[in-house]
Amino acid sequence: MALGIDINGAPALQAAVLGLRRAEKEIQKQVRTQTREKLLPEWQKAVRERADTRLEQRVLADTARVKMSNQNVRLSSATVGRKLSGGLNPKTQAAAAEFGADRKVKVTYDARSRKGKTFKVTRRTRAQLRPVRKGGYAVFPAAKELIPRFAALWVQTVVRTFHEGIEGK
Image (cartoon, rainbow, N blue to C red; front, side, top):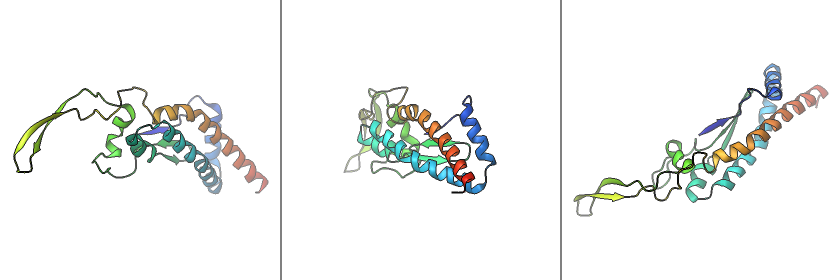
């Protein structure tokens, strides 16, 4: 699950991106580094505050990351890590933790007894998940709240870094 700040229609962001593209490599690096240092803790805190269940904490909050480029800020979650002890892979199955699932669905599968005999088992395997919510529970609400703030901070960081570069600091 990855989100990006869309710069269409935002003149200040477009000006910052254009200015950053033409800047020296060292200034570009400073902007990326400073922006990431400020955004990452805020992003992780926002996702962690909204992740109520232990599954959401492990799959969504613990994997929240910020990736920077000269023209984009990418907020992501559930893109790193390995399978959890129960077998859930956050990279491929994070949608169930973020958006919930139909808890009434029953799944029938084959099980094997200790003596080696196979038999059918019918269970509600999604009962531990939250009900379906189109807008998500943790990542998407956090992004909806923080993207405007992050965009403003990114522009401020670009302007401040340019200003410090001109002054020679």
